[in-house]
Structures are given as C-alpha cells and as structure tokens.
Amino acid sequence: MYNEKLNSLFEKWKKTYSEEEQKKFCEDGLLLKEDTSINVDELWEKSKRRILFLVKDCPDGWGYDLRTLLRVSDDARNLKGQFMQRIAKAFYGLLENQADKRVNDKYVNERMENGEVQKTWNTVPFAMIETKKMAGGKDVSSAELQEALERDKKFLIEEIDILSPNVIVCFDGGKNIFNFVTKEYCAGEEPLKIEDKEYAGGFCLYYYKSKNLAVIQSNHPSYAEEDWAFQERIYSPFNNLLRRTDTL
Image (cartoon, rainbow, N blue to C red):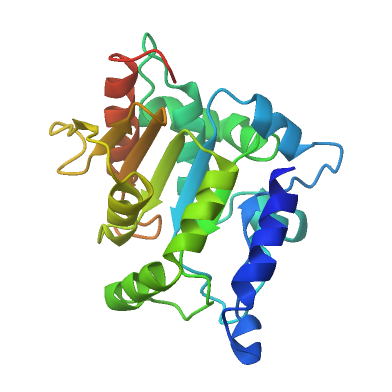
C-alpha cells in the first residue's frame, strides 16, 4: 500500500513545519485514476517500469494532494496544455521504448493524435513528486528549490524509497533535482553515464546498477523549446541504455 505508507510519512513531515506552513504542504505519490476500479498500488507493484516524475512545486500557492489530480481535473485527464501533454508523452515514450524498438517523438505524437497516450495516462500507474513541498507562485528560483531540497532531504529520500521507482525523470533544467537524486539518493555508487550528444544536447541519463535505476535529466515541461527536442532528450538516452542492459 504505497500511498498509505506515504500518508504516514507526510504526517511526520508536516509536523516539521508551522501550522500556517502546513496549509501550503503538497502531498503526492501514485496518482489515482478517475476510474476507481483501477488499483494503482497493485498495478505499480506489478509494473516492469515504475516511472516517477520529479517536479519543482505546486504553483497555486496553497497545499493540496497531487494524487487526486486526475479525479478532480478534466484538463489533466484530457491533457490540456503543454505541461500535461509533455509529461504524458514522456510517460508513453518511456513505456514504449525497447532495446529493439526505438521510439521517437514522431511515433509518440501519432499516438497522441489517436488517443493512445491519453488512454495510457488515465489507466497505467505513474508517480509524481513535488520536490519543494511548500506551494509557491508561478516561478521558483534555483536558490529556493535548493534550500527546500536541503531542508527536506531525509524525507524526500524516504518518499522515493517507499515508491521504489526504476525510472526517475527530473524536470528541472537547472539540475538541482537531478543533482539531488544522483548525489544524495544514489550516493556512494558510480553510475553508468549516458550522454547522447546527437539528440540530448548536453542532457544525460545516469544508470545505477545496484538500484536498477535510470535517472534522466530533463527540462521543465513548460520550458520554451521545440517539442521534438524536449521528447528526444528523454527518449534517446533511455533507448541507448536499453540497448546496453535488459534489466528495464
């Protein structure tokens, strides 16, 4: 029961903040589906690829439970807007890529058009974590994000441990989140580093054998860049990894 374990963690975590700050605390984890018959905990346990997306914070200025997003928001379910569309495409592309099947942006966009991406988004389990638990405004500075990562380090590590993903996508072009995962959560192990210069443009993937974990550096979904480039920074190094190892 992953989300139940997270609830217990959040109870402890919130107590480290003042009563006023607790109103801004964002809970997260495995996103629940609108179809209540879908047991995301059970499906996550059985999933070969357990994909976790790490984002910065909630921009609404008030705390809420991100896990209910697909139940309360028509826009989120229907993939309205660049932010949701890019995360959903990344999710679909990571699921579909295989060592002998190189999935690219064109493939995913075609399946976006025929509804397959949206169907997967609303039926297959995935996890999302707001790494800065205090809801903020439209933008969060690198310094603010880093301060939050340092403050809540042990709790964030425990949250990731509970979810036990084997693919983590860090949506932060400034690398604060990527550096946190690779230097703190994965501390003590030298990773296999995959830097795909042709497509990824300086972005990279680190693979940790002991955890069987791929950590992917990505821009934020709202970043102003061409959609194909955003997708390929994720797909290309991941497919490169799959051709080297069959564990994922």
